[in-house]
Image 1 (cartoon, rainbow, N blue to C red):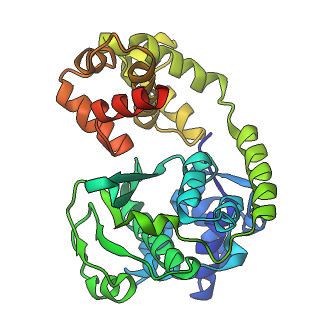
Image 2: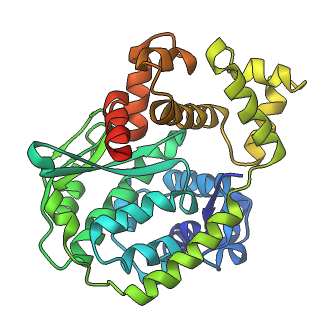
Length: 340
């Protein structure tokens, strides 16, 4: 089941209550009682969080509300992953822990740091969102604001931001962006990126606490282990996807037929677990691509593309870069240099 920590719901639910919205109405809209989200680390079905954001978008007049919500980096809303990140010695290690414990936040959203430029003097923090539909832009604004504001507040030195890049178009409330972010921005880009000097990632955090870090990491690891196991259905779908990728038949129609159920039945069954078939397909493809690139050096990138069901290598290259921020060739070279 695709889940998010209850703290993700609570911060937005509380904001709606402060706007004098009825608790009963919000609960009815999302199909969940407020009492069920008071414990920050309780896992809540992703669909409830999605419905809460849809309700917020539809009911709040201020279209920049997600940015303002992101500015409220309050300790009472910090989840275990946030606690791990805050107690790390440097910003670089914080982002390493974000990648490690990504599934404790939201598996529809991935965050990756990629260095580039001469001597890797620059870094881009790439935020990728999958299958979020109507709420995608607002979730991205919330994430961007939390990271930009958080880095400015938590790092001991002045933030060295170069630029911000957004996939969405320039919004009508661009003045709010300028007031909050205060760096050059580009819109309608290929990816969502926070670009900064790599040296900034190695600056110490004001909140670093080595002893607490180890305690928080143990707790986060235990939580991660508890949610790693997929259902029998999801594992069955994964196995069929892997077996049929190279044939080009790994679509929901063929997989549902192999499971002796209709397309709609499979769609609804996965939805109950907070899973979208397309997201699962891409996840399997990404995992298999990395495995082939690392362990099967006898295959070329073009051959791997066909093994994963892509009709054209260029489509695989685009997909892989979207997943990881680098090309398959660059990934293979890094894997090879690491092995040596």
